[in-house]
Length: 56
Image 1 (cartoon, rainbow, N blue to C red):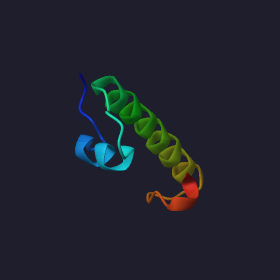
Image 2: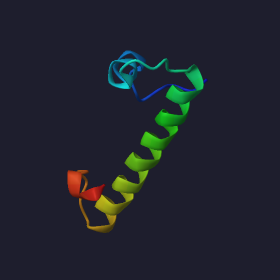
Image 3: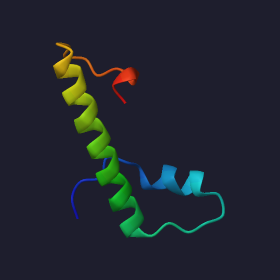
């Protein structure tokens, strides 16, 4: 298992009444990593070193 960029306890808080499997947290973490990578590329393409909400 790679390092998670999401917090399992926070996922469980937001799941409201559902159990959360370990593979869900890992898959969500990969999705978030992808979002961050795409946002970073967009910021760089716009000649910025700061990722902003609009990069999502």
